[in-house]
Length: 375
Image: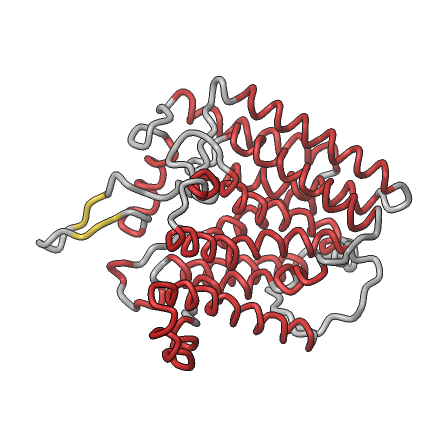
């Protein structure tokens, strides 16, 4: 835990947009779903559709949450890495910090979705979580930014897209069963892959149902983080002309959306494979969101009604871990079980709301005390 000093150069839009992303993930969406199920109103079905992941090909609003998390990781990097570049003649101090962060994010990811706390190696999954995709993308983006000029950073990012595209196009198809990325996961991760199930005789088999691909998709994870880093660089170097920053972010977003849609004619938009077209499309949306938040908050100076999102944004890893791992419903039930007789079928709605309200209050207390989990 750290108690950071006030930094007047810190961009509020970064923390607030990151907080908006985490608020959607660990409060709004789960509460919306349980509330909508209870109300059972037909017109909410269209809204719920957008707050669920696309089954395979296509893109919904909820498919933007994970890319935005990676994008915001990259957006902070030009600010954070500048503290360490050139401080000494050796890269080891900064790499030691980077590797420590990567290791912690991988462990946290295994806690959330890798069954690490189950203490059963049969069900252990090594690489299966958003935090781990952030770890890999962050490492790749850090190496690129530490060792290449901006011109070469763009070139290496394009090279990552090309490396991803070649085998995905020529060594498989874009079906759940036949795509190249899934075959790589099977070969590299084996029984530690997401979607493995155990047979009665003790043997294991691959399930045809898996959430995402990871090893080969790491290339495009890195691209998503680099897109965020490019946005961060634009904001970092444009403090004297913030109107121009808004314009560049907006144009870049529109161009990326257009390129993503154009590429989708050959490579479908599939978030579960993190295809190149999905990477550009989601990256474009992230640029547009960043432009909107930067315009309203850092250019116009409006934070009223939005500053509370920093509670999530400045403790994003803590918010994600607690929201995904710890069940505060038990705490709520232990002190409010008497309400069940009055709330009836609305009692589960109350428990879900209370679960994430307790999480918010914990994060708010940490924020007020200046306590932030840094990895």
